[in-house]
Image 1 (cartoon, helix red, strand yellow):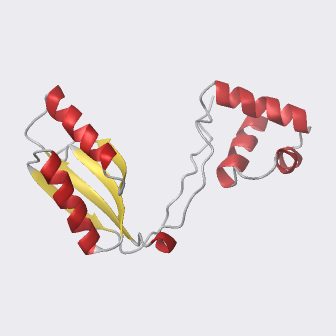
Image 2: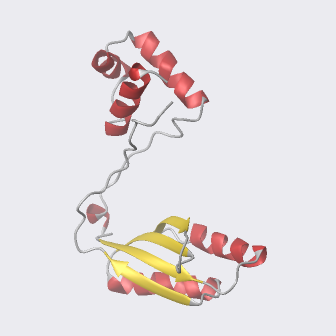
Length: 153
């Protein structure tokens, strides 16, 4: 990966909806050269998808929650149930297995505390959990989908 690829990725992370002509001009390439590089980045799996980022507040999803989960079960059957439950609840936008005392951390977007409570009840009805703790975001100091490109090879 060279600096042109990094510039293309930076621009796409900022606005994937821009035209190929706009992008090519910003990175100082011809339209065709820019398009070929994008296709190569897609084929290598570096670009996984091009998506629209939505405003949660305008969709009545103004409360962000991080949910810490502990479980006493770690067998494959439990993990399959847990994974299916997490995938089936659309308010859960991220699920991560972690180290330390917390086994999993979930990221969720809900309308309010009552919305979180409904999510919580659906989750515990689907899979047994030892402990569930939630942390609610009061202020988003930084939130981005852009990945740093300094480490790309």
